[in-house]
Image 1 (cartoon, one colour):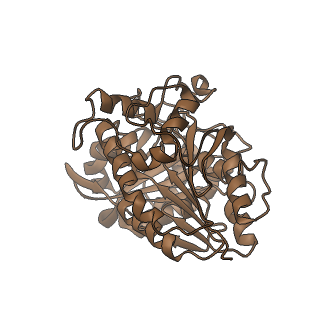
Image 2 (image 1 turned 120 degrees about the vertical axis):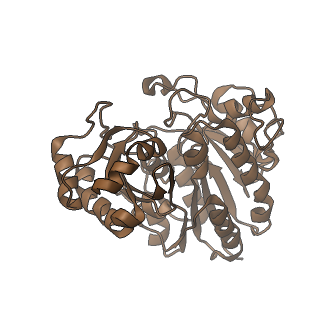
Image 3 (image 1 turned 60 degrees about the vertical axis):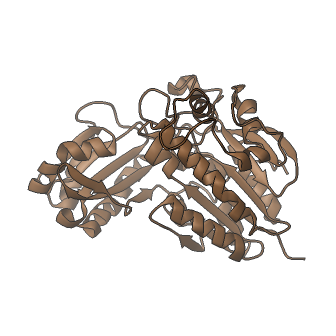
Length: 400
């Protein structure tokens, strides 16, 4: 009998509310999926789409039920009787960011407190600024504050092109971001700057140094797909390491390679958009080896619609993703398992522009009808390992 495969698919930021510690993060009341569904039902998300939120494929597996379990919120448009595996997961790591969520889903909670930069101007200590200048060969930096990527580039684009100084900024996440023009500053120079700076910041428990390249001119610039994250390494072996260590094939789709510092990943599959990444997922549904793990991240829910607080755009992205799933399911084989989940929330109806602390849905194809209830992020990794017959080395417990 051919050994079943596993597909762990993270819909970045697609939270479902109800995190018991949301108030401690300033996020009490946030609920990405429920609030999008409500906005659609109330006619507040009509741009490029219309009516109730339409996600019949994931809802049939149990998406609406997972939202109601996590938060008790109404789910107009998502009211199917579950036919798949469904539940909701709660995070214990002290963060609401990409590394924390993904590592814990892969069985490894973060054992330290992340370093965050203060909401002051300047935001960065003098020694970090001096190191950026030394590595970049410049006399200063621009920005040095909390900001969103597009506005900070718009503010400093002209001066950046005139001086060559990198644009440095942060957010509510544990990140240090550097934006620079691909031609005028140089893409390879930007990537090297971020790579060389990363060890200093990782030693201080800053989660990621992110290169944010852009092209164009002041008033007419565009961020490119050549973004690269230099993330701190997980503190112990993750699900990817467990599976690779057992001699199995592993595939990473999207920014999984960056998040896990390429540890435990046999092959990376990248693209310029989530549409490109979805084609990789469909292809691997057909081609991935018996007993293999495919770990995917679809980031545009978060980057294009969550942070900019674009409710209609977020709803369109959810509906586009769901509409493509029958193509993926058609490639799966008996014995395969596909789990859809998220790493945190990013409620586009909420105040601010940052991630929100939420539970996340856990919805599965290939395990029959199964109510797994409230579980931990770490239980997702343990369950995938159990499905593959691989020993788990983290604190999670399989819900299979």
